[in-house]
Amino acid sequence: MASKIEDYALIGDCQTAGLVGRDGSIDWLCFPRFDSGACFAALLGTPDHGRWRIAPTEPVRQVTRAYRNETLVLETTFETDSGSVTLIDCMPIRTDAPDVVRLVQGRRGTVRMRIELAIRFDYGSITPWVRQEPGGVSAVGGPDTLHLRTPVPLDGQGWTTYGEFDVSEGEQVPFVLTWHRSHDSAPPAIDAVHVIETTADWWRAWSARCTYVGEWRDAVIRSLITLKALTYAPTGGMVAAPTTSLPEHIGGQRNWDYRYCWLRDATFTLTALMQCGYIEEANAWRQWLLRAVAGRGSELRIMYGLSGERRLPELTLPWLPGYEHSSPVRIGNAAHDQFQLDMFGEVLDCLHLGRHFGLNEDASEWRIERELIARLEDVWPEPDEGIWEVRGPKRHFTHSKLMAWVAFDRAVKDVERFGLDGPADRWRQLGHQLHREICDLGFNRGRNTFVQYYGGTTVDAALLMMAEVGFLPATDPRIVGTVAAVERDLVRGGLVDRYRSESGIDGLPTGEGAFLLCTFWLADNYALMGRRADARRTFEHLLSIRNDVGLLAEEYDPVAQRHLGNFPQAFSHLGLINTARNLTQPDTPATVRQQA
Image 1 (spheres, rainbow, N blue to C red):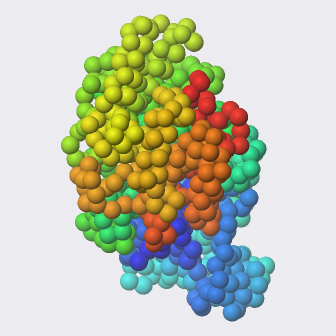
Image 2 (cartoon, rainbow, N blue to C red):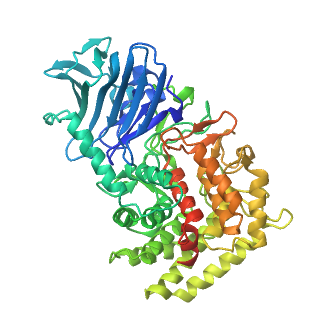
């Protein structure tokens, strides 16, 4: 069985990523891209579905681990009766073929170590031929080849490669795993010790560009590094998470592939990166966005592939039993074909914020926005699947209508503040019409709260965005009533559920964890309302549930006290950065979005 989700740490090269457990096992790794087939998929099955473990042969008394300061170089230290060793893991920033570098360093005494390498291409479905070669082994299966280079003698037993070695104080033993296409020649060997140092230097130089100086700088830096690791460097796109099918409910069916780029991440990503000094990354993301959405407004998708691909067919992998038997395991995501009205608002808000922050404007940007607004004028009265991508009936979700209002509002501001050409009076009129409709049909006067969908009675955490995007002031009695309803109906153990899954609104079996981004939104609302003590208490509670290396999944089970959902989750770390700024600095994400 795989480790608990929170027992993993992330390594990556800004094109793909792996998860390393506290036990020294890499249980998830996709080559050469985030969305490629995994060569290690034990995370969603058993060790026979692929993993690479390096650990002491004797019982381990204590495990401690940490990233090197402001880097993505992971150090795991094992304490045994015989001594102490540190396992260093990293993925060098790619210049040629992708590599995973592991280095075992002796700290105290002499420790016997064991390597176990089970390579299984295509999510554990292909067992490759492994053969000895000078300085290691190679594994070939279909289009993929992996080379493991190490001075440790290796031996194959039952389709798995093993090796044992001793490491004493002051000694170090390297391992380098390199991928290439099976019809190409093997890339040259690299020096593990040198590469680890240059990788650490690269990350330190990147982190040094951060302009955040608030109280929680370490947490913000770790979240920024995580976001950077989730970007796909060749295109500027960003995956929601590097994993697929980690369950939102153990044993349940809420298991989705998050290795794609969602448009609604755009606003949060731009805000977080730009306000922390990362203009280059924000501009690359915006350029990816413009390329992805180019074309007819009727062709807008809610998500795209790493390079802007639009066909992301969903299928299940029956040979994988799933994380803790949570099945099915899915690759691809059928939600890419949904109609989600809020996308228009997310895109228009994103590009408007880019202008506010002075990003160099692409000549085609406004033309693309005009096309999207023209489409929105036709479709905003229609029901949709909403921000939570329900697989039940379409509805008139209040949050979706809110973001349609945002689109018209930002389009008017673009004309008035930046001198762009467009029918601002018509867009203003549509915005006023939507505002009145939302306040009339989306507000339940009996409960004194905005509701999940027109005519409904239940509350939705996405309604916490209303004050953040400037729809109404945070002190408006209707917003105050909505926050009170969220506190009353959706808060468990200090954390916020998206909505009540037992309502059947999403067409799926009940049960999931609290959604961490929604809890950050609650803290933001507290801050905007002047409830500073509540905002700080909520934020610090969120910080306390990060794992030992500062990472967050999508959700958290406050009863079992464990992480749930894909990991690490970009939305959760975006929320952390934005809330930290909301609590510590005057030019906060919330105030910028309201005033821009």
